[in-house]
Structure formats: structure tokens, C-alpha cells
Length: 360
Image (cartoon, rainbow, N blue to C red; front, side, top):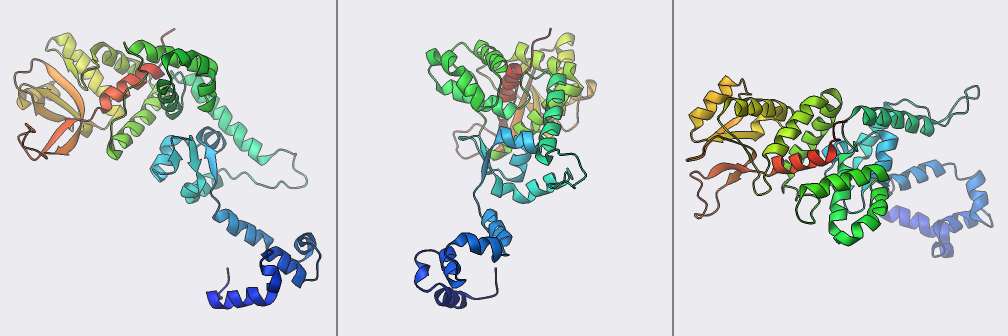
């Protein structure tokens, strides 16, 4: 905090503190000032204490549970992930504040809620104002959404932790796990029952697709799905219902036939799907690329949807893809770079089936 070099400040420390150096810097300063304890020094003479405290805080390793941070600041998992992918610790469900400090300060500053009130202002705590504001917004959005629980990152963590438990312990430990992820008991029971009904075995979720790009696609899609669950819930329900009707656990793609009703279903699914996941990530395949190009035009589908051919395939195969590189001659791909299913559609589809409330 000064322009002294290392040698100079070591000399200052030695001259001022003397034999008190081993006892501690603050006791040395108190002795230098002629005080018996550090209390008097701080109360009357250490006028830079706020600078020292600020400097220590700037280096502090502070963590907050993500549920607490979201209630206080309104920052959810996706916003934190976009700022720093390493800030969130999935094991402890906490956020390292030092990794998002500049962004956090900017977001808090825009609220313009004073930390100190004037003498003639009512005695309302500023932090409580901010917390109440976020809680009100949270409750309002939760009421309008068709999601059982709006914080999908917590739901993912909740299901993954439950899945690690033996099946006969899940009912007993459900409340404890739910509290840890900030989910109410009623919501947790509903999520657990919906997830358990999707699988024939003891699974509650499927593995997340690997790779940072796939994670970004999923996070963006879930953000958009939550907004759609408020603004256009019927479109989201329709997307999920078509997926539920067409899905197969053994495949990461879904298939549509060639009849008119199937094509109408394909059209509805892709129109909603391209709102959740950018069109360039989707691929439709048939026995020839030209057939896919024609159906895209006939159904007025997004031109950015990729086309592909699958020999002897009857109907239309829909999937979310990622670009891969051919690394072995055993790979049957015709080119060095090719598009393969990313597993994003299957993961997103099953998660949305768990998250969405049944129609009343």
C-alpha cells in the first residue's frame, strides 16, 4: 500500500517493532505508541484501519450458498457461469465471490439502495429492502411459471445427490437433501416422484453431456425454457409432450414419420425447439439430404437447421448435434469432421419432463 520496496519496509518493521515483531505487528505498534493494548491504538490513532480492512477483504476467500446469493442479488447459476465457469462449486453448492467480484459490484450498484440512511429517513434496513425485493420477484415468477421449482440448477443437484443414495434410504433422507438445495418439501416430493416414474431402474436423471460447449447450450436452453414457462407455457408443454411421446432411452434422437399428422408434429416441435436451442445446433436427417431440404421449406422451418442423410432410414430423425473430428479408421464417418448427436436433446427433454407441472 506504499511505494517502499521490500528492503525498505523490512527495515521500517524492524526499527519500529523491535522485539515485538515476533509477538505481532499490532502489539508492536501499540508499544511504539506507548499503549498497553492494541485497543487504544485502534480507537484513537489507527486512522487507516478502513484501508487495512478493505485490503484484507479484497484478498479474502468468501463463499456463499448459491441459493442465498440468488435471493440477495438476483444472480442465478447461469449468470454466474457466464462470468466465470469456475466460480460455482457443485460439490458444496457455493459460489466463490472473489471470482465474480467486478460483476457482482456492478450488479449491486445498479440497485442504488443506500447502505446508510439519513437521520430523517424511516428505519428500514437496506439489505432487507433488497432481499424483500428479490423475494417478491422470485415469488411472482414462481407463481406464473409452470416449473415445479424455478431454480433448475438446484433441481439438477437435488436429483443427482438423491441418485447417489441407495433407493431404500431416499425417502428418509429426502427432506435433508431438499433443504440443502433450497427446495421445499412439497416440491421435492413432487420432483422425486416425477423423476422416479421416468425410469425402470433406480435412476432419477441421466448423465449430463460432456464438454463445455454442451454445458453452455444446456444452460442457455434452460434459461429460455424458464422464460417460456412464464410467457408461453402451452408452447413449452407441447414441446415436452411431443418429446415424451417420441423419446427412447436408448437413443439421443427422436423420430417422426412421413404422414401429415407426423409432419405437423415435427413442425411444432422444431418451432419450439429452435426457441430453446439455436437452430444451428439442430439436425434433421432422412434417407437423403434433399428430402430434408424440401421438408424444411414445406414446413417453413429455420434455414439454419442442419440437414443430413441416413441410409435406408424411413421418416425423419431429429437431434441436437456437435462437430467432432474423426480420430480412428474404425469410425465410419466419410469425412474428417462430422456432426454427431451431443446428447443434449435427451438430457434437456428428460429434465423438462421432471420440472414441469401436470395440467390441473
